[in-house]
Image (cartoon, rainbow, N blue to C red):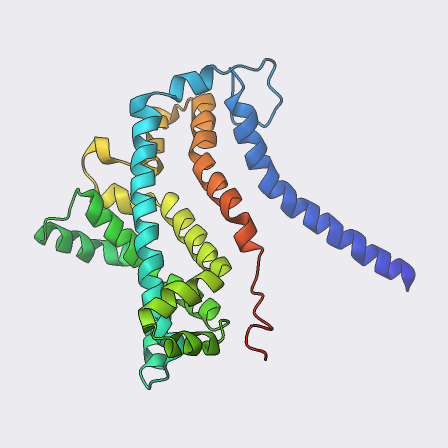
Length: 275
């Protein structure tokens, strides 16, 4: 019996190690290749460490302008998504209506739509309303594409905030909007952090939407400009591609580190309405 348990544990450990290796090897290739003057597709320790790959990509056209465009697009889209998701989730969480369930099912259906299925009508619509090749139009579409799942997440977190806290604020003369901003959202900080990180990461790695809606090269984000490293006939400068990938991943890592405490804080409202 004991040998059987040991065998199962070793098999589970081997499976976990294989899964971990599948994630670690690509990351190791990116980091090692960014410092390798003769980088290729193999994962290897470089013979000599060099910063030439970073020097080659740290230019205004290759890195700084695309990263700034990405920050504007993803930051603006995330702000719109979080604000609209909070406003939409509040009545769904606090008020009971016959329309709540059909609306939530509609939102759930919207999360299943592939982005490629709606891009053709969206492109035609943007042409008609003069939003094609504009940053604000792309921000609005980013927010609209992430909003369904953000509403689901926000509502689930909002359900964990006791309604009695809002009723006490209403007694003191606060409106529903004031109670949402001053009571509910501060208490569900981890939920807001989850929605923020999820929305930002999904927008940050989106290649297809800005590629279709933006036409001017100066407005292209880093998710699209990374395609420039893949040259004709399969020629790729792997060292510069890896260096750009490290720089490209830095804002997402910094965002996660910045909200890590909020993500792990949880809700401590067990005794908030006692007494």
